[in-house]
Every structure is written in structure tokens, then in C-alpha cells.
Length: 163
Ligand SMILES: [Fe+2]
Image (cartoon, rainbow, N blue to C red):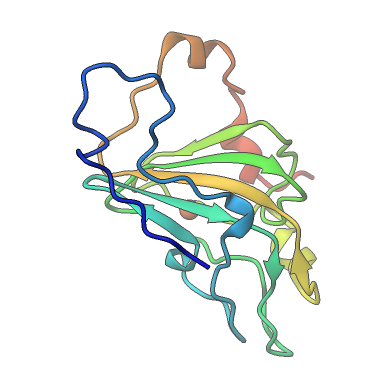
């Protein structure tokens, strides 16, 4: 049973903030994206939306279930936003050599998609256990010096087919 709880004042209308008054709290494990027979567009993963950003959650789910479906996403470029992806857990089907804890940044307008071999690898797969969070900011991401120090400089070459 759900009971209403009414505050006397707005929870943001305060001077001191102890870090415990969150506007929303939801576990990523409670997020259920829409799935379909054919590949669904990225907004099915969208969990939050702000003025100049969206947050998408990639969670364990059934893959596209048409007999001839190709579960890997298609190559694309975001015109309006950068794409910052944090790989939390599981096997990231569309990427080669991405490990838990890594973050990728695909600047707006830069075409990207599955790594070589990932499309073929995805065919026939029924489900994923991946867990990742994506932020699409509509203003360009500013890179800190600390981030540049841990950058994998050859990441952009990871789409090249190895011979
Ligand atoms: Fe993307």
C-alpha cells in the first residue's frame, strides 16, 4: 500500500544540504526497456531527461526476437549530442576490448557503431546481461587534464579491421 507524504516546504528550498535529499532515487535494476521483434531505437533506453541532456540505462534484456533480427545496433552519428558511455557490468556485445569501469566518449557528429565482428557475433543471441549508463549532453563535453592522462590514445583505431 502507498501512503502520501507531504512536506511542509519544497525539499530543494533549503540553505544547508547534507547530501541526503535526492529529488529522485531509482535503482537501475528496476528499469525495464521496451524490447521488440526488430531493433528498437536508442530512446527505449532513456531513463531521465533534462534541459540539455538525457540519461540512458542499458540493462539486461531480451534481444530482438524476429528470426532474422540482427541484435547489434546500427552505425549512427548523433548530430545534437556527445555520447558518454560508462560500462558497469556484463558483456558489451557491440564493442571489442571494452572492460568494466571504462568510459567512452563519442563526440557529436562522429559516426560510430559496432566494432568489427560484433554484428556477426550478435546474430542468434537471445539476451544480454550488459549494464551501462549513457549520458548524452547537448553541449560538448569538456575534457579534464586528469581524464586525458588516462585516455587510451588508440581507441579511435579500434574500428579498424585487424589483418
Ligand atoms: Fe551511439
